[in-house]
Image (tube, rainbow over all chains, first blue to last red; front, side, top):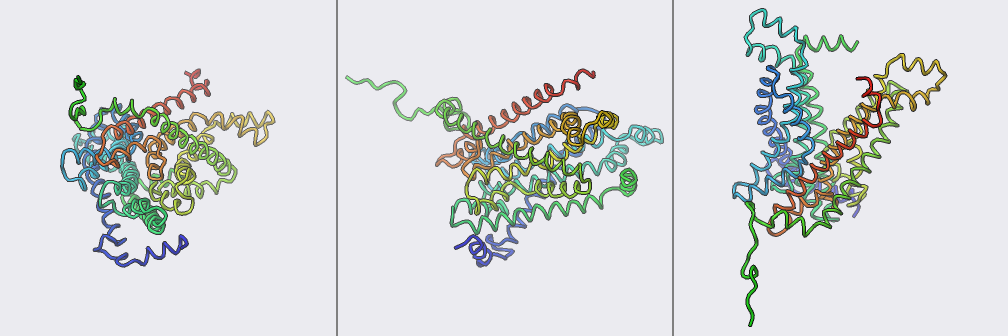
Length: 237
Length: 234
């Protein structure tokens, strides 16, 4: 049977397009996105306020830098397996928490680094002007620095989210879920007879990542403050 | 008369906090395999970076020569960068098998976005008067590129190469699903034994991070050695 025949057989398997059966691509897609979005939210809640506060008072620049560099060097693959192993030793639930913790840890560096860099690079005179007109420090942070740094923060979110989508798939190695990565890991386990599943799962993972990237592009366009977008457009003219 | 030897009575597996073989014992027993997998890790990283850099320089030259192609090339490289490694391996494996090629292709394509962007940015920031004096001295277009623009772009190119190298070293661990993986092989093996072992997992992660830090440092030092003018300026 050729590879494409195998792919065809895999695509037309019963329940392949079910929303409720674990065999179904829609079911796995939802599972994949649920995990990625949840991890992104937790990472944003942890990283953005802290980085905003630290950057406002110009503290912890070294830590911000180190976090980004170390985050890049730690293999996500290793982190997932390590956390799964720890969970199995401590006899806590191994399907949800280890993967979520590993994902959050991976999402933190780009979010923290970008928020910090975005705030630090703002024009000092704007901040001083706000201070002069009577803005409190927290108002400066929330009403000035946060929206003005938003494009950079969103860029960090995009990097983090894509990394998360890619890593949820790897999570299928240790976990019953793993979203669309489930097919890939199962396909590898099956060997030659798993080629259809491997190819189908691989295409699904790639398609999901590209779709998410496109979606983020749109979000960034909508979330950039209009004044800022105009300014950027003028700059690039 | 036989006296039972000390330490051979009953199960005397020394337990660390996590259980399993202690790391030092495990490393001693597997030193050959560690050296071999470290070599594999370096080979995969170097091949991917080599191919990535060669392709990036070629595509950057194209982008600089025909400016309109730059957004197109960057767009394609960006899309390749977005593709999750696991997805890329899965799509390639049915065709090229569980091979070195299947492992290297995605690793190499990941480096393109970072490297192309840095080569082009690096060449762009070469001061106009430097370029003009070279042209005034009779440099041809290709000599200008290879002997003036690219060397002056080196600090930015090396910065990109460092990011690409560190990222690639992390990604190599995923190729353990293809039977490669370098140090990632140990990470995966830690959970594939009947009783999961912490030692290989920890050794795999730690050595992978150490390798990334060392390679980063080596590239930084190489960059400094190749661009002495960046230091004299101070």
